[in-house]
Image (cartoon, rainbow, N blue to C red; front, side, top):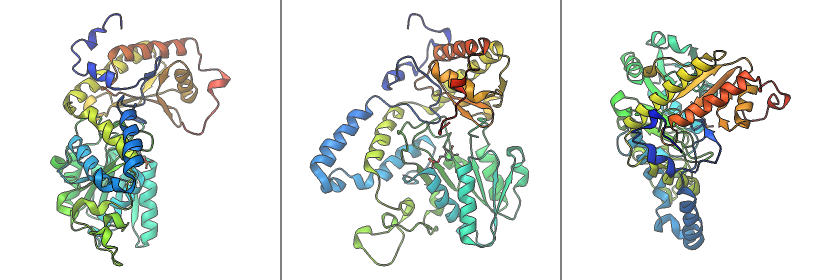
Length: 406
Ligand SMILES: *Cc1c(COP(=O)(O)O)cnc(C)c1O
């Protein structure tokens, strides 16, 4: 870089950029969908593939502790989300983990029938709750209100409050502590999806008294496409829950090969089947970049990047309408704008090296990841956006053709 952007002076995270493989000519504002490859991951993967798998073969489960990777990685993620030790395990996908925690929570509240969520939740969470309710066939109701109405909808018929802390479309952030407290006051349990929180800013699961949480490994945690997810169970519940998915890896003694299921002690009962060692290896290695950073420092820079982006876009691109909350306090680490031809606009941005994403019907979404972005990147991204809008470059057939993944 020839000269430093004034807002990048004294950036305590500036050196972290070198820990990532960023393709030349790309400004990556989509780390909230798929995190960037940390530079040392390929070497670690190669080692585990060639040395551990290649040479140790089946002995690797013991010799390299593959069997304990879900807990090891879980504890590392737990540190980032304010969990107690041995309260998080890395396993399965977020979708599957939704099923596990909702079923466990419902079983702890047998007399109650209502699961409360909001229409800002990610659809897979809602689908899983609906499917589970159908499967249980005990007249459970999935009640969906708008995000602003959640607090008032917490009534004493609730079994479970199931929310995603940061809205994937708008970036609006719920008050996890206050809503959990409200749920507890009516005797309900609180489940938090941290898909857009973990690795993005400080989370305090323990201090918020959350009952259960889940989240993704491939977003801000940079674990790679389809990385294992995580699941948190508050220590006070761990030995009271009976998992719905009673797999052998959640058994108290998997290698006793008992014919009867008996749950493992603690968080391990949330495990189901054989852990994906290669995927866990990538996620484990990716977490190294968080080892020496303070999540508060990440948060401060994230706010600064987001505020700068909003100010620049509103100043230079008046046709864009802010969808995200203006107040950083109630916003995650992403900023969304509405534009009628949002899909075509995002395709044009991507073709010009600025990668964000599009969420139907008309929202363009930009994620800000302080570990590898600078204010200079933000300024350049807005230059590109402004040029595309003033030249109406988005209005070309090639940018309107929809692909399978948006
Ligand atoms: C990204 C995301 C998911 C994705 O779930 P997968 O099982 O990884 O496909 C689920 N919930 C929320 C809130 C998300 O943002």
